[in-house]
Length: 158
Image: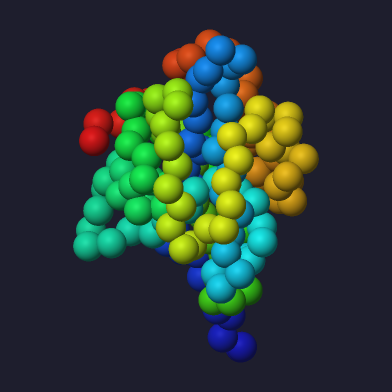
C-alpha cells in the first residue's frame, strides 16, 4: 500500500489589522510589500513571525514597532484566521488576525519590508487588496468596530 503523506500545516506568525479612529471614523493601515520581500507590491495588513518563543501579543507589539514605529493602545484577538497554501514552502499556513488600535495622528515610520502605507476606510482598503479572505476580514472588522469593542473579541494583555 502506498505511503500517504499529508500537506503540512503551519502557523508561522500573525496578521495585524492596525486601526485608528479619527473625526471621520475608523481607518485601517494598509502596507505595500517592498520589491525584495515575498508578495512584492501587494497591499495588506502588517504580518510577522514568532521569535524566541514570543506570545502572540508580544509578536504584535514587536512587529508593529519594527515595521511601522507604532505602539498599540489596545490589542484584540478576533475570530479570524487567514488560511492559504504557501507555495514557497509547500505548506498550508494559518495566521490569526489581531486588531491593534493605535492613537489617532500616530506617525508611521516604515521599515524596508514595506514601500508604502495608507490609512483607508474599510471600503477603500477592500479595493486595494487582492485576497478575498482579506477583503472579507476588512468588511467584518469594520462592522465589529461599529460596536467597539466587539463582544466576540478578546483583549490581549501586553
